[in-house]
Length: 120
Length: 107
Image (tube, rainbow over all chains, first blue to last red; front, side, top):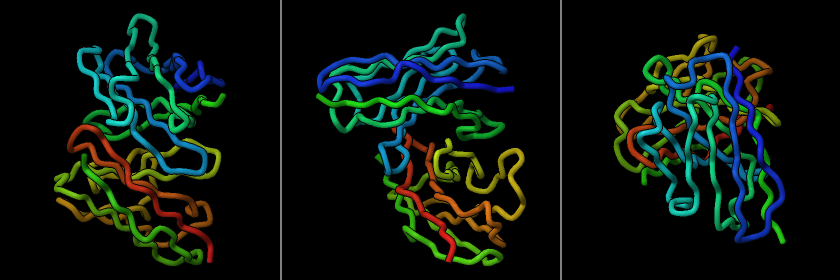
């Protein structure tokens, strides 16, 4: 069974940093691109960042470029999101999602999310 | 970046009725468009990818169509469990983007 479990969320002050993790199981992690998607309270979905299966390429939303860094450790089946210079508008539930590739070109599996609160 | 505009924002229908949801892109995304369903307190679920392909386990009452800039998600006959928020997403160009969502509510 495919599972994605996010962790690392919490309360952080504006300007602070946080590292999110997503532990993957039930599939060959190293074969899939992985993404972070967030959802502010009561709002819609927002793509945040993506990384290719081997970690060779990374992509970011304009709103987080230069502040967030996505990475992965295929030996640990874990995806990361290093978040810096956090702002009030970064407060959201952060999901990790597997990109299904050509067999299902979309986010075919999602975690339950980890909540990031930015407040002084 | 490519902007996706979904309409209507809210659709009020009764069970058994047909739902037609629209997603319009600010530039062509070819067929690289997906649809997701999200219920309160749950993660989204992939319904349709590449405009018209149903994801694994998705009932046949869900169908997608369109290409270029105009796309449609159709639910042929609404079941009680279909009342939710629906999002489109493009993967034609980075950054990937989502539409603002359409809420399908019970009339």
